[in-house]
Image (cartoon, rainbow over all chains, first blue to last red; front, side, top):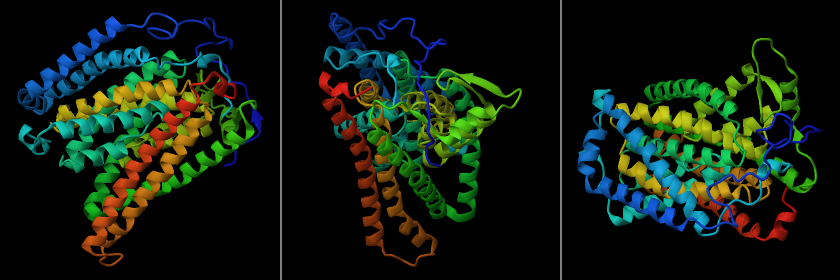
Length: 113
Length: 354
């Protein structure tokens, strides 16, 4: 199945007309030039640390309930989602604080692959 | 179902070393996942089993970390405008059917040929799928790199044909394709992704290339949309395992702790490197994992009695070599991403990037 020879031009997602209506719209909690969210990152980090500490302090109780099956099956699912929301928010800001953030607006870039 | 219920006493003790090991493995898996849309499961499950976790608990716990990780990655990449949510949901729904059929096939193979036969089936699927798809992805990456960033993306002949087919009542428009496509094409692709996920735990190895080459979705969007598919498949799969009490949530959350750092970095990387790197990383990881599974084929053939007895020591050596090559595949992927990010940090380096 060799690649064919028809060329196409990618339009950014999120636009029917092919142009991004908000090309400069910020897409994250903080962009490179602004103030870095130190306070929020520390707060979220402390909350995540608290959740993990609670999990391991009460690991016997947690694993007992979480492995009962049946209706208790929602417990690991909801817990994983809750951890991911909080921890995801923390890790996102963690990289921003370290200065590792997205570059440019990919939606406006033509992809040659 | 009740017989399969695990009890808390079946779960391993977690000391500091094991915790650090799981967090680190999660980080590397998350980094690759955030970048190419899949990956990690093929190393994380064996990594957990290496700590003494029973196989089913390892698979279930891995599944339980996978869907929230995919959710976070999908949200992040949606902010970059890279996710086609509608396509992800359509593929994810049909992938569920593939997962069910794939699991039934696994059970049938296990019943007919035993554990060695089942392992051989999984390894053969790895070798065939990764050999074919991985080679094609790498060849295409080479072509894209040779053409350079100035040349517009090309559709494959297959994708052009898929776009040209009009079947009344089945047509659906997807933003990433810029065309109406019959769901009679997307359903088999989602189904194949689900079947592969149930067979080798990495459905994205078929899902991402099929979106790119069959539907004509750009690589960046395909890898991001695969995260939506992985979320849908992972959540349903994890819930099924949780019904049997097989999820060790401590393992899932420890891996998640590392992988969420990794998946954000992988998503950021997609904005800092040339898009062709998606194909390079995916192709390289696929080919290395292929070799890893190929190393195990003689072991399973020997256990089935087809190859004759290769001996305990040779068998053990092949198992260790297979795991190391597997881990090397994931590390190579992570290394390529970090290297590309490092090179892409300079504004001048991005002049060549689209």
